Amino acid sequence: MLPVLTLPAGATLRRRALLAVLALLLAMASCLLTAPTPAAHADDKDDKIQRKQEVDRQLDDIRGDLYDVNQDLGDTYLALAQTELEIPGAQQDLEDAQREADDARRADEDMGRRLTDAQTELDRLEGEVQTGQDEVDRSDEDMKRLSLAAYKGDGIPSAASVYLGSADPQDAVDRSMNYTLTLETQGTALQGLRTDQALTTNSADRIGAVRQEVADLKAQAEETLQAKIDAEGRAQQAKDDLDALYQQQTQQKADLEAKKTQYEGQETDLSTDSDGLDQDIDELTRQEQEAAARGKPETTVPDNGGAPGVSARGFMRPVGGTMNSTFGWRFHPVYHKRMQHKGDDFPVACGTPVRAAQDGKVIATTSNGRAGNKLIISHGVLDGKVITTSYHHLSSFKVSVGQTVHRGDIVAASGTTGASTGCHLHFEVHENGTAVDPKLYV
Image 1 (spheres, rainbow, N blue to C red):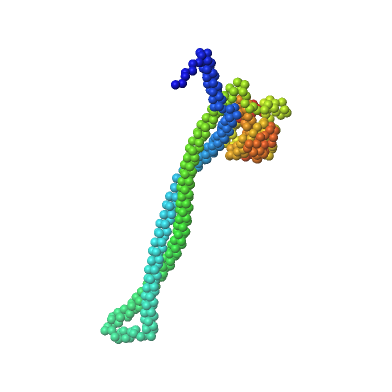
Image 2 (image 1 turned 60 degrees about the vertical axis):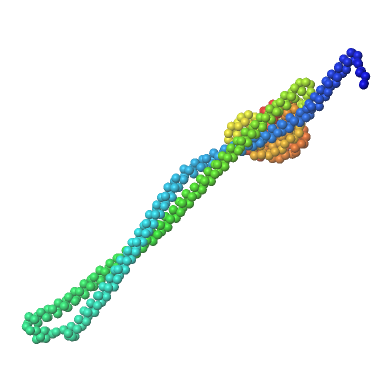
């Protein structure tokens, strides 16, 4: 059994006090180990600012795309409406052409029937002419034989034989008159045949002329029919083209509406991200300001005020000359609508050297359809705010990401890339990722 050690009352109090001090020191050490360092705090804020700038850049791009889609969609709506207006007219033209072609077909068929009838009648008359001619020829031959026989006296009774062979004088007279009448009748018949033949021949000639006229009309009807068929084909092609255009425009409208919905969703997501980063940056800024108030300032923008061309806050204009469009709301010359202009425009020639407005570090060199070639420089913290400057529509970069620059260094060349109407420099200043009026700094 071990002996029990009994401490004096004063020793016990001192031991308790020592343990309390040790516990306090351990708690303080734990706090120091878990609390973020100023450097880590600044890095986190810089990272969020860069992320916000990237999100805002994407947001600008998506809004530009959304504007373009809305423009295209508006144009498509108008074109589709115009096509819808033209389709009934094209349909009516097609129906008219089809009706005219049908009329031409009926006219051609009618002319064909008339031509067939005329040919049939002509064939009949030509047959009659031939038959009549044969009869005339036979009758003519009979008359010739009869006349020749009379001339020779063959088979023709003389006056003496008539009277001698007759029972009485009256019989002789009758026989003579009958013979004479026979000759006259034969001659009359022959003349009638010749008259009929002439009439038939004349009718055949007229039918032939009619047949030729009908043939000419048939040829014209065929030409008209072909022209109407060609017109019908053109009208059908025009209607088919309009139908195809309508289908194409309808599909284009559907595609643009789907793209618009997609862009609107992306815009909402990016806006939410940007707002969240704004809140994070504001919170980090508040913490920095509290740290500064406790006498623990973090990195600051160098104060180079007083130098020629340098503002009281130590910034200089990136190019010389005057501005022709400043920060604020304006009617955008490219997008043709009222929009916020987030910086100042300097109308300088393409290729003009662009200088850093203040000492800093290049954190981005990007290119997009709106800002064109764009350079971003971070200048650290000033009055508890992280300051960045951006330079848009550049023709080229003279520095790279991660490079440290000093105020006045040439960092780029001006241009007219992106949504630009001419050579110029668009210059922006951002506080914690939000664009502010550059005149507050330069």
